[in-house]
Length: 305
Ligand code: DON
Image (cartoon, rainbow, N blue to C red; front, top):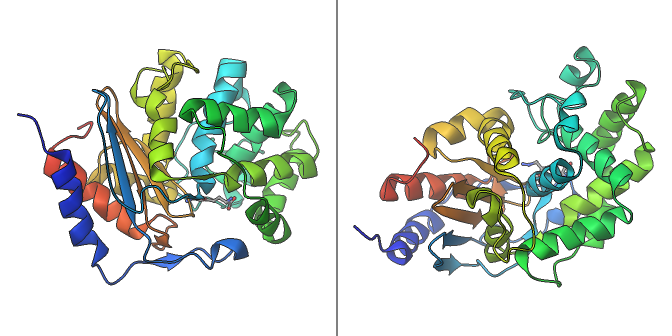
C-alpha cells in the first residue's frame, strides 16, 4: 500500500511542534546561542524520486557534527581502510567531547564521529587535499548540487575562541603522534567544516548517496558499496554518542545529529529524512527531532529492524 508521506509529516509536525519542553539551544558555541528555539522543519526524500517537507525545512542552520559523516566519506574515498589505522569504530558510550578514553587508549579515538575522531579525519583530509577547506566545501556542494552552500565564518570563529576541549583533544592526539599537521591547522579546518550551513532539504540531498548504495543524487560523487555499508554502520552505532542505543531503540535508523539541532537519518534503498529543531536534550541531540523521527518510523513501519 502506498503511504501518504506528506500527511504523515504534517501530522507529526502538528503533534511535535506543540510539545512544551523543546530542550536547550547549545550555547557553548556563543554564535549558536541566539537561534530561535521554535524553528522546526522536516524534509523527506524517497528513492523513488519524491520529496516532502513541512515547517522550516528550507531554512539553513549550522550542521555542526553532521558534517563529520561527510568528512568521513570524503576521507574514505581518498585513503580507504587506512583510516582504521588511526581511528577505531567502536561506540564510545560517552559524550561527543569526552577526553579520558582518548588518553587511556593511547590517542586512538573510539570512532570517527566523536570530536577526537573527527579531528583525526580532518587531519587526513588536510594531508590529502590540495586546498582542504575549498575542496571539502566543493565536495559537499557537489553532493547537493548547490554552489551556494558555504561556511559560516562567524560560527567558525566563535568556536575557535571557545573550543578549549577541542584544543585539548587535538593536543592529546598530537602527543600520541596521531596528527600529521599542526593543531592550529587541523582545528581551523574542523571548525570551518562544522560551521557549514544547510537546510533540511539540502541535507537530505547530501545524504542521498548513503541510502543509494553510494551514488549521489546528481551522480557527481560515487562511493563504493563497501564504504557505504561501513559508514551507515558507524552512524547507527556511534551517530548519537551516549544516546546511540536510545536512537536505535526508538527510531531504528542510521543517522547523525549536530548541536545546531539537525538530525539526518536514512533507510537504505528507501529514503533520507532530515529534521531541525534547535533545542537539545541533555545528551546534545535535538529533543523534538528525536521525537519526530520516532513517530515517523512508528507510523510508517519503515526502519532497518
Ligand atoms: O566540536 C564541537 O563541539 C562542535 N563543532 C560539534 C559538536 C556536535 O555537533 C555534537 N553533536 N551532537
